[in-house]
Length: 360
Image (cartoon, rainbow, N blue to C red; front, top):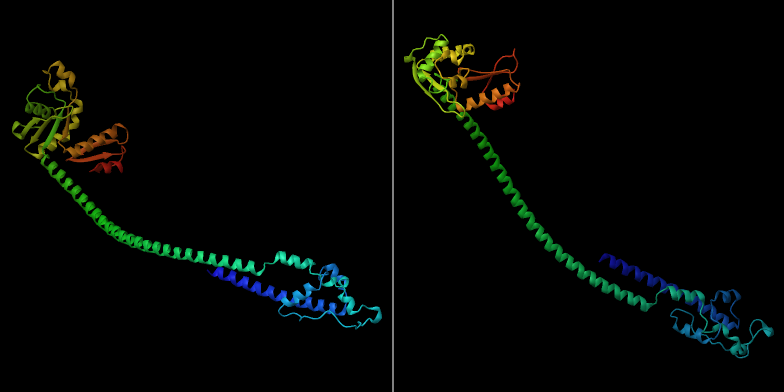
């Protein structure tokens, strides 16, 4: 809108300036033409070359003078018998009236600069048409601006609604984040409690097995389970009677069926377990010479292990696997606790979970 007003203002100033210039040039032109016509002189040679004055008729001069608002008033071209200032040698007023001598006011001649100005400068009708087009453009621009304002208000309203929805969503998201953080904290605490419960349960279960030992390497149907346990204790020089055994039976595992023996006294169990390394020098055939050839072929050595819980037994299995891979130097259990060695000269390290193994 401001651009259109600036354009109109510039056009108006241009028209005023050109109109003033035309008035000034026309006044000067008509004044000079009138003076030369009254004096009976032809237009000067330098003006003829420049094409300033018309040369054919005085009617065009009179017509132009009548149309000029601020120019020279109409002046008569005829005088009665007076001579001009050049005397007898000069021409008279009657000669001026002669059509042959009045070519300085020819209406058919158009100056070159005037023609060029007419070609280059717009007239009032063109300016009026331009102004009408500008007004139409202004109206069109006004309508477009009004539409843009309406669209802008609509978009602004939609944006405000979207911002409100976004703020509500952000608040709800922050609320959910807080709830999630609190839930994660509760889950973490519950996981710690569960781990602690599992550890306590494992400890309690392992405590119930403190008087139990597992004996592997004795096939079934060789002899009675209690007799087999007594033969093993005899081979280790441990004085164990049948009354010292609380219960004795076999349990089913994936590959073997070891004998579980629960003793009345923990001292008996501990003494027997300490001597289990002596079984390296005792073979199955030495303990059971009357066993069948198939039984002797299926078993070569006898092992004594502590009766561990499922969790601790799996942990010992993983540690033995790493020992076979050369990552550990030794794995053993002492009073239901698991210890590993990372070097032959190193101190045994107690482990409770698989993470402890991974962090060695």
